[in-house]
Image (tube, rainbow, N blue to C red):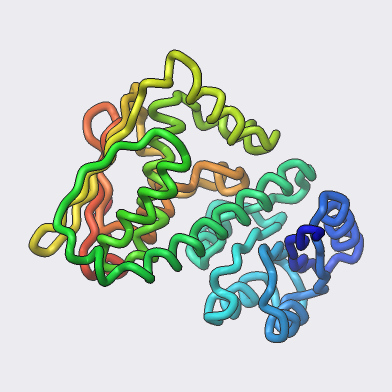
Length: 306
């Protein structure tokens, strides 16, 4: 049986751009559906929720990208579809507006097809992992909420996925906590233990060889014995999660917010989004290879990031 194609809604008012984007996506194995403006896109989405990604132009007549995005995020059937915003308006203020509204992937015109494909793959992968994890987390929350503390070790991306699902179930809101736990654990593996630098990962993701490089390094004698650790403790009015790797550490400060430069790349947003969506506070200790994350019952409404 042929594998079902992943579907992308492409929204752009310029016919030439629309034709070009649809052609590039279809030539790379995707099913692309066209919409000439935000209003048409919303009309399509009202009748068809089955999209893996929405590629949304910002500047359009009738209904622009920001207004369409607001309607998407307000609809329970649509809000979890990842949105990649393409725009020539890429000032820091406009980028931040999009990020605050729920856009974590940006394409600044003009862009190259390999960057578009890397962002699409990244958005689909992140969305699938999050949906799967939320389903698992919600299914077993009642049981895991009785656990007071635990200590774990992990090494591979498979370990990260399994353990992140497990630990998120210990938290007040599993679906809220999951993304941040997974992202910081992934940082511990790839940037910490395996020494993959930010710029290296960007190139790997664009070249679509990121997973292969991680598997290769995990087998290398320099890295094969390195492990990361996670501890969990439920306190009186707070859940504390500590993640520590065996790497050289790094300066986390530039990654605490989503910068304009990184908004157009397929990586580099994990810590900032974790801060925004998952934790009451994040604090990196010492040289940066140990992070203490705290989750309060009201973590969505109360943030204190160091």
